Amino acid sequence: MAISPLMPVYPRCEVAPVRGEGAYLFDADGKKWLDFASGIAVNLLGHGHPHLTKAIQQQAATLMHTSNLYGSPQQLSVAERLIALTFADTLFFTNSGAEAVECAIKTARAYHYAGGNPEKFRLITFSNAFHGRTLATISATDQEKLRKGFEPLPDWFKVLPYNDLEAVKAALDPSIGGFLLEPVQGEGGIRPATPEFLNGLRALADAHDLMLVLDEVQTGVGRTGTLFAHEQYGVTPDIMAIAKGIGGGFPVGACLATEKAARGMVIGTHGSTYGGNPLAMAAINAVLDIVAEPEFLAQTRQTSERLRAALQQMIPNHDLFQEVRGLGLLLGVKLNGDSRAFVAHARSSHGLLTVAAGDNVVRILPPLNIGEAHIRECVDKLSAAAASFQPAEAV
Image (tube, rainbow, N blue to C red; front, side, top):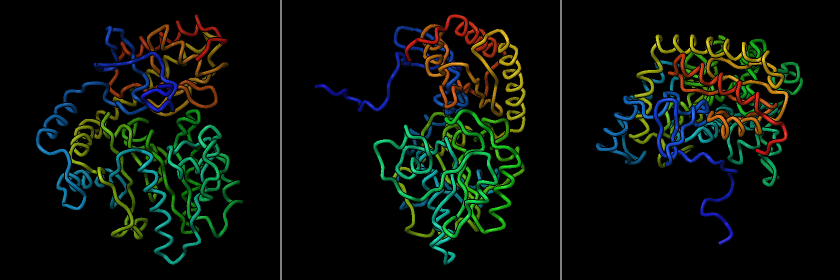
């Protein structure tokens, strides 16, 4: 057979973990990696966290799945908890970030349809965004690597430059129903929205009865030092997609909305077979038990400051590095070179797992509960990798 058993859509690397412990991954031979990728911002409590593991084990032995045709005490309890922690009045549970964004898009469109304005079907999105891999979410970006081979795509989005409020103002027309963006672009290069930009979008949404939709799939659940990144901007969205860290490694997401924004989401407009299953709810509860505590978030901010300072102190020692970007523990190091090649080198030669991003940025996404020793180890490995890196190395 010429094709691999796994559809060859990933260029899988040599790392093949079979076990995780805290901030480390191990393969079958015992080789060890410092995991500052965290499954791309998913394993926010590291690997094998006892509270999270116990909650999932206990729920698996009790009830894993029923159906959304039935009542769900587990969903209701977690929904009430998330609503109490956020701007939202209601939410829908999904299995992934892409599904959460899909639901957010539908919620925004249903809002205008229910209000008698079906012509307001299009959302303004932003260059280099990443919102998922479904047909709708790849339509919401201008990244050719995501769109190639799948066009023609739905004409539901107008893609504009990120952080360009004047371009947004000029693009408003009767088809625009709202804005969809990441408060910090992750895959696009760890690019935070400016306060003026995000606050300006909120003001435009209020002035024109538009929906401000935030994709906090990567930025949410403590990753940036607050429970959600928009809190640092003093901006409240109408709709928000979350996933990744909210399950601590278990696949789960959610679309949160205000009562007003969700007015079109009535019986029959959306659904999911697995969304909100009891196992996923147990995972969310366990994560929130830890991450939603003010003391934990304060510790995350302190850890971020120490990691950022250590990275900035390292930069002058290597011509390869330019700057540190990001918020909280969603950090990026901009390179004078190919970030994908460097990520591969640091992984294979120095046992450090990071993630490449656009604009030749290396994403640094450690578990939120790392300590000083992990920070020193990360910076030492980055420094050693920079010293031995040959720019012509293959990824």
